Structure formats: C-alpha cells, structure tokens
Length: 88
Image 1: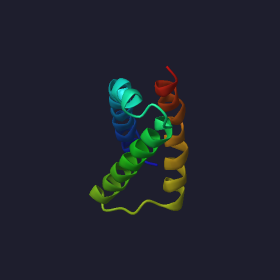
Image 2: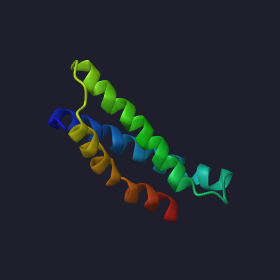
Image 3: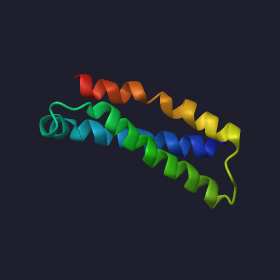
C-alpha cells in the first residue's frame, strides 16, 4: 500500500475510533445486550474500505491483490482498540 494512502487511512481510522469512543456511552445504554464492539468495528472498516478505494480511484489506480491484503492487515490492528472501548 502506498505510504500516502496508508497515512490518510491512519488519520481516518483514528478519527472513526475517536467517534466510536465518544458515542460509546449512548451505544452501551441503547443496546445493552448486544455485541456492539463487533458492529462498530464492521462499520468502521466498511467506511475505511470505501476511503481506501476512493484514494486509489483519485490516483486512477486499481488496488492490487497485495494492496488489499495489506489493507486487511492494516485495519485488523484497530480491532483491539474498538474492543477496548466497549470493555470499559
């Protein structure tokens, strides 16, 4: 994955995780018996994937198989951060 795309994704994912942290009290109260960590992680990664594809499209490029694999590895690092939000 290109460094500028990775840097953009890092900033974007940090923002999304920060927003999840801000909304966590509401989410925990609104859905007390649900695994919201998994749902929030899926929403964050879905949004990040859209941004990942858009960044490639703006450069008139198609992500390679290696880019997609690197994306998966890169975003998986955020699972623990999202899980921690809902464990608190």
